Image 1 (cartoon, rainbow, N blue to C red):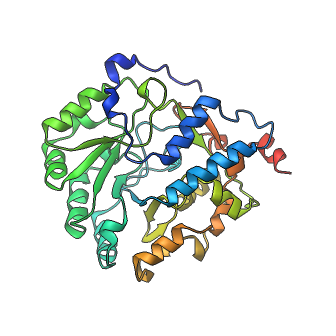
Image 2: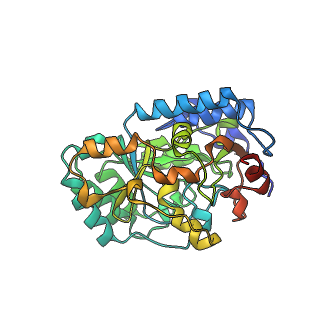
Length: 334
């Protein structure tokens, strides 16, 4: 599938002053590779410079406060190819308020948890698809009154959101962060809309050509789990920084937490081991989380980070190759 043409940035991109991502060190690495080019067809192993850049980005992430991402829906209305949340391949599911309340109570009992994370991020999928999003925002603020809260959205549904959404966002002091895709949206108008409702705004992810995301990270998954987990972790631009709360567990990354979606859609057999996550019930202190996020995990053996590439942004065709190793990539590993 060919990428869609980017709209005229002079009419849809926000002003230059807005082009500061909420969290960007791994996007710095992505954008540096945007300028130098990605791997494309797998014809050679990653260069020493690529490995050095990836390791440097990984170490910068570990020096920063992590985010805790919560997928309030699994599906999306944009469906980016190679989405690290597997949203194009996911069935439509919604996080229940009861599950959210249960997990929030467990989180809130951990001393210092609210300020340990740079932010608690309600995302997906596309979070604006959740009809109960205002209640989820309020529940998060009620249990974690000192936390920085964000809703991360693509913005496609923003103009259709009702007063309950805007009231919750403003009253709960929850920041709206938009990821800027070349979809034709007038993002400046969306920022103005949020400001008119008294809601803080920001940019999620990164920007590149024309003020929009022009490339996406693709890390092939090895179904056989033959990758060196320490080497994979040391090159990973997500692990240890974008933590994921999923099914009552904290995982060190989004992709690893959501491997079950690939299993359901593509018939793979990715499996989690106990060392891949922390059960909320078992967390004694924030030191447990900090220690977990700084080490390689059994599931790191599935990520062929030595073959990561920056693909042109496009909508997904929900093909295996968007997430799984291609035959030519598998041949390189032999």
